[in-house]
Length: 295
Ligand SMILES: [Fe+2]
Image 1 (tube, protein in one colour):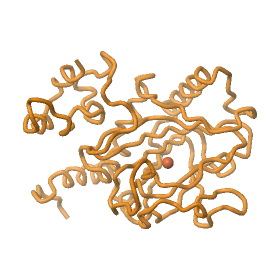
Image 2 (cartoon, helix red, strand yellow):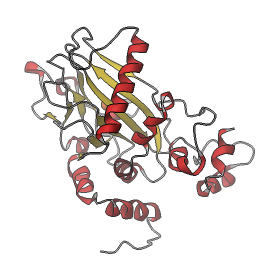
Image 3 (cartoon, protein in one colour):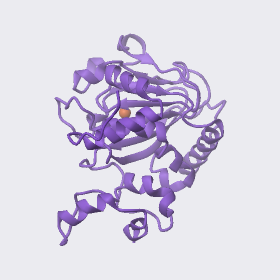
């Protein structure tokens, strides 16, 4: 059917049209039914390689030791490489990537914002990451059925279960609650029987609803498993990263208009003396405002 300019859901019709134009209606059905979907070739091999190498380089600097992507054995843990966006402009592409972002906007509304951008760098050994919902960051049970937060998990290395793939419990967004202790396990006898491994090649994006139970399998082979987690939230939720600071010159006018919105330029809340009306009007701001917003 044709999607009209229906005034009862003005943002949704915009988001839905974009999803149709980008050929994502199947992904949308998967998200609704199972709480996650897979976007193939979300990043090019060149983008994937460049971002992965930059993440490893930054991790080495932060950890103070070298890492071996193919043969690592000493890094027997998962380390979160946080706050990546401003480390290198190349990471912008992962945040404003049209296909994953259209699906995130369906889940979180047209005016959602970036909560954090980081990477989990995992070597062999350690427990992986136990099953959880990302609503664990402050939301009490029962969760609303609609998503409050959502994740775009990019595979920066090939995901297989032995290599430490993302784990997912399909359909678990419908439980609308956090995992209990006996539902969290991913290894050995404690493994939740409903958990599956998301086995996808590097460059794939896995987009999932904030309620969906997920985790990551322990890595059982030498080398590193690297992801890139772009985490988004609804506009009324406190993002994980500090959104009051954007380095001077980081946003480049029109070119970064979408990113400026995701970094909070158009947020309605947070007014001062001028009051809310003026700030709501800023939602229709054009790119010229990017510069003044930064200052
Ligand atoms: Fe998570």
